Image 1 (cartoon, rainbow, N blue to C red):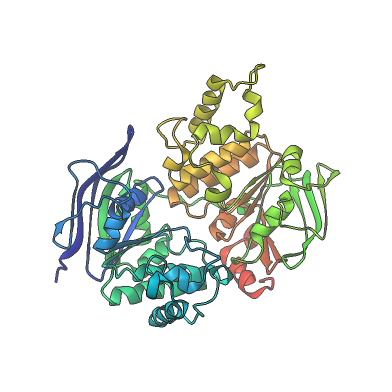
Image 2: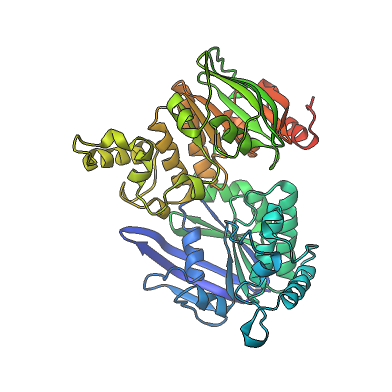
Length: 506
């Protein structure tokens, strides 16, 4: 029996300046369905969600019907009042406020004279949490909670608006496998309650686990809608890319040899975070550090680079055979190290600035004239070169970086640090939150960087990155290295077993 669509989009179009982000998008979802929306970064998924959420208005000729009537929200509040609620990829809770205050923000109960009633707020929040099987004290500050609980609080907060349609943008990003299952169970529960859920994710295994149907987008168009039970992940990927994704032999299995030690780290310790880490990185080598979320991967990258907050109790460094302090990021950069952080939105990009501005920021003084003014011609040439060399999809070097997809933003950030001619490149989760096509391109780019003699260290929970890219890999468990793999032993099952057990797998 066919389900009458609750929300139906026909011929959705959207242009930003001269760039057509959406061309011909068709999409529909019935009551109580979970509908997957997939595609490479830049395919148009986020733009479609923003139109449905009232953030953007579509171009003329677009037809959206919701609950039997034409739907054209002028802003996000219109969408909320209509029953279409968005849960964004980034956790947008206020850490210093309590669970109850976050859940009921803008829906707070008030008493006489409009004063907030904390006791009633906590009681209401406790009832909501109980409905969704969350055993949390509503008076707990949010910044004391783990990521998976924060994600679920976002869902509970969204449910205070009594949504008919829930738009979920990458709801499981940055979660461990166990945490992911908790969130997916909650999605299934919401669907049983009659909520229609648009589920956007790069993790196709999760899409297949919870979605009834999958709509695939490519280059701003809908290229197909498939019944989940009638298709496979390989078929969906083929539709997303418009081509087959070729599986290459892993780098480690190819047996690449590296002899010259470029960077030596000995006994690096940060109290309560990292314990006695020692390793050598060779010139042209891609070295990996992996483990579960919370095992100390990002902390290790930041400790090596001298980022504030990583107070090193002990540890020594040698670069090209000479002792060096790497006391802070400025000194590390001067010595030839570069760090791509895992939080490109908060620590990587300058969102309101152009591609050129972001690429040239670390070396901006190179483009100054004797008068002190910037040579804009040379700056723009550098921006164009980055776009061409790294195959960044953009309207031009003057385009604001915030207008790019996540994968293209990541390419710009890699280009930014390559302008410093690094000897050692530290990459913290370089492919997280990026579609499969962009992952493939960034992996090839990392191999090219290593081929030019740069020593590369990847810190990631993404085991496919470790398998495909790394010559060697260390596994971390609660801040300690517990295993090292290379050659044929550098494979998923051994890495996973070591990551979860804290003991070296056979």
